[in-house]
Image (cartoon, rainbow, N blue to C red):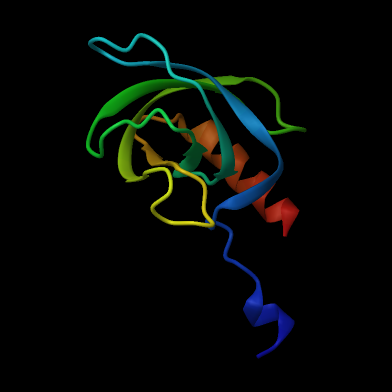
Amino acid sequence: MTAETDRPTADSRKNLRAPLIIQKVLIEGDRPAFFGYTKSISKSGMFIATTNMIQPGEQVKLEFQLPAPLKGIVRCLCEVVWKRPHGTHLPFEPGIGIKFVDLPIEISDKLDEWIKQQL
């Protein structure tokens, strides 16, 4: 296999050198806020490292800062697609995988271009 075939595709998640802080998640019901760190991101979703689990299928309104050098705060509706509870998948961190439901196309395009530049 060559180095060229080993490279991830542009829509693969990009592991971040410095985690992004998930500033705010608005959840309908009894949990008004949620905090965690995202360790990887793509134009379609992200992994959030957290011990405050949200159930798969639940939708949340998420707010986060774009990775540098991109600028701006993103607010969008997301859906939890999977969760990894603490201690069940060592050595991996507990957390949730989310997909963006209504991420604006211009933000999705910016993330996709940023990921391509990181390869």
